[in-house]
Image (cartoon, rainbow, N blue to C red):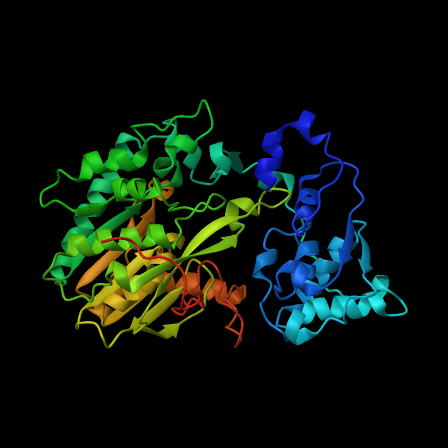
Length: 470
């Protein structure tokens, strides 16, 4: 709705006198000028009986993820956050009226937050005294964060600035040097030899960047370079003897993206549809005779959720978009170990008794998390370490895998495979523990995180969604 409003142009929007409906508050997040927001609440049926529907209409004016308000009748574990957000909305200047003939809101029929809001409107102190303690309001994006975002066409955002000069990589201004290409060849040959000596296969997956998959959405005059680092690596490494198993499933993602987004428009990572297509590429590389359990397309459904993403959160107002999440119909894998370290230094182990007795070790960056629901189902044992282009020989030695899989996002191709010079994994883990950089333990009843979660149960509905055609 924000994108459509901006597309109208200032001349058109300046003539708009009134916007009505449950989503009208969204326009306040755009900064449309002097407005006087008024909310008149009547029967819940006016809002299609959606739980907490009245509160959501207010929330739409301050946050992009109001749809993630729990569809519950009891206050959830993060109830204080939602009360604070409604309070922040009210302080934009809303005049709230609760129609006298409207029945008293009922938590069972209307939702817990609507019931609290209705009670506050009828209380002697009115809405001004609610809630007694609102808690902390999430801060708005800072200008320096917004500078990291490049606005593309069709509402798509791209990463503009990062420590790996990714934008300059994609436009050809930051190619790999001859020395860097030499280092990649030496590192790849060394990995191949070490892992082969342990009786395992090495598969290296480079995740195509959204700039490559959705090149048509890049803003003018930005164009995708044919000499970006990922393509330099493919040209340099694929002719080696023996040839490395190097995957770059760009064509697969582009074909799917004609009809379905494999990347959220407001996030720099592939969504779980893109991750599933990458999973298919890995299994195809393994071949039909590999001891793995293969998740067929009919066994995985994809569901539309909404979420701001790492790019949408950097804009002000924050922007959100559709994010496809996957539900494995018969989850047979289980998480049996997790050190809960945030990001770099994370280590987790999965077991799946339904899979053949194959073992896999995955070294990957943040893009690897979205592949875990699929990979965990395919091997009897799988160990994942969050490492950026690093293979730890000690883990390969102890886990005795059949397959070693590295997952590297395209923008990290400038990170050279210098395993012997990498920070020891145990030192990184100790540093994170000292800084208390740990992932919070799951709370019963709380929905799984939208990203970087290792929870195999995504909390998605059994019905609905869609499956990919065979």
